[in-house]
Length: 140
Image (cartoon, rainbow, N blue to C red; front, side, top):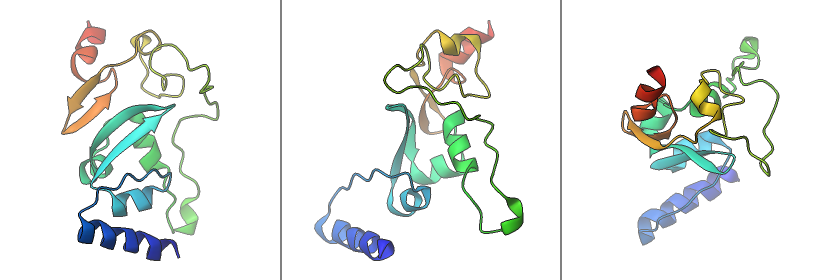
């Protein structure tokens, strides 16, 4: 049923030249339907770009973890470990600095202090201190 509805939406999109905004936690649906994707964490866009680039070469640590968490049909592989831990930030009281820093395996001191500005990295727009001028500043 889901596949039929998605195919119908795609047909309508082509026939009527529509732009669709699709919000989903289902990464397979996003990859199948979207031409551009924005990845959000605690209500903030952390990465955006064309779907092929984001899925093939994710830049933000959260995007990487999301894509690494996709279950495979191979039973022996088990559940992937994304190295994010089990603790979640409270969306009503987000942490200071980057909202992802408490769970980020690559967090630096600047991450807990300053909200990262969006930077262009490999064709994607990424809000992360690992890229652009923020990365240069923290390396000094």
